[in-house]
Image (cartoon, rainbow, N blue to C red; front, side, top):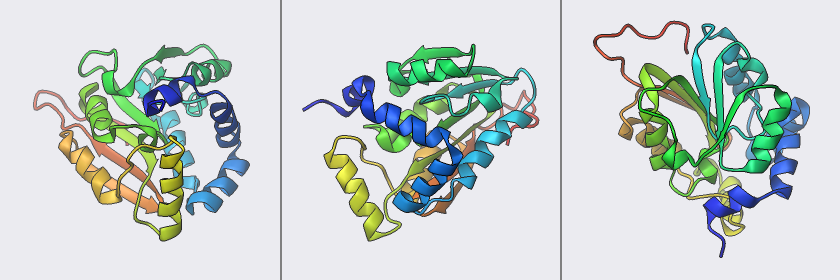
Amino acid sequence: MTSLRDRWKTERLHAVFYDRGVQNRRIAKAAGRLMWGYDTGGLWRSIDLLATAPAGCTVLDVPCGGGIAVPAARRLRYVGADLSPVMLDRARRHGPVTLVQADVNALPFPDATFDLCVTYNGLHCLPDPPAAVTEMARVLRPGGTLRGSTVTRGSSRRHDALIAVMRRLNMFGPSGTPADLAAWLTGAGLTDVRVTLSGAIADFTARRPPDIRDAPLPGIR
């Protein structure tokens, strides 16, 4: 059986179908409600916050998918990383941004590289979400923020059954409950953890503690 990692690295049809849907806010809103009971307003508010970050802020988007966050991050020093060459090709259509093919569990960046890391709708597709969170925290600068969203278990029997189907289809990893998500974030050394549940999807934010020699980063929420 193809590993989950290799599945997402080579998948084409589902990648294109998903990206077309999520890029259209109207379709994404309907699909989010139907499948997960999710208000996609939380996702878009998080993405739109990129436009309020200080100019020159360094941002890592992983997995970046088809570049859903790129338009809001044009003023920033944006880097998109994804395992899927299909998704990276689709992200390139949004303009000249830095894109890297990379495994989220082994990011090719030094420690403390980015002011902000965003990860939208990706953790539930990974074989080892806690390790991915730890790696994202590693590349954050002191005072930097990790922000994202992920499908979680435990919201309802229907949603848990759908998650089980996705796992049997080798499209989802182990996922976790909102409590698990909070534990992954704190276990990675992050603080100020906030997890907000909408249906089966959790929007979350956390911060790498600022170094005592540095002031907290302004304007990053």
